[in-house]
Length: 216
Image 1 (cartoon, rainbow, N blue to C red):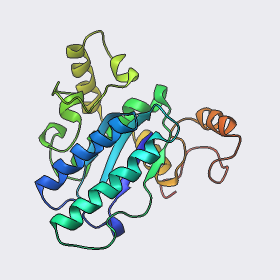
Image 2: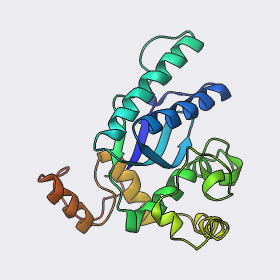
Image 3: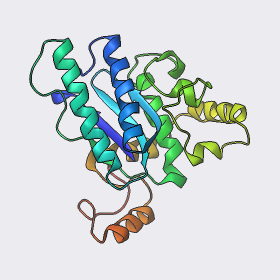
């Protein structure tokens, strides 16, 4: 699942370095509690992206509920503020592992570069790129099977993944990832969406198929 959590009215949700650190400690603790694997993440000034795999059906929802409440209490206490911090409920999208998982990895970790906050993804401190591409140690980040399939050893995988990141994300995939998480639609092909709808026994979204429009 690709999850996005935004600050209320797109206002900042991180104000100093210790806020980012507290969020990371909290998200890893909540993920362990509800048995959710974190594959990739980035903490931006006013929003967060997470790539997750839960073991239980409601794992992500429970994790995000606890995380949101824990972090808001921290921020309100430290910064002497009141009121809401998050823009309602988090947004999420089921991801087609075969075709879109590694694209989501790159989409998430290249956010700071697209936002002109740094020139290279390794220059940004608050993302999982250092783990997934540079071999940094973080027990809170667990590799997805598609990342493991890049090569036979971790050293080779880091290199292969860096090559993928250097290629960027194809414009069609970038557009689809962004559109699907915003609308709560499955990120994948029309066939993948049909499989998800069949499993849920209901239509998702407006029922229209095909490539999302740029302004969708």
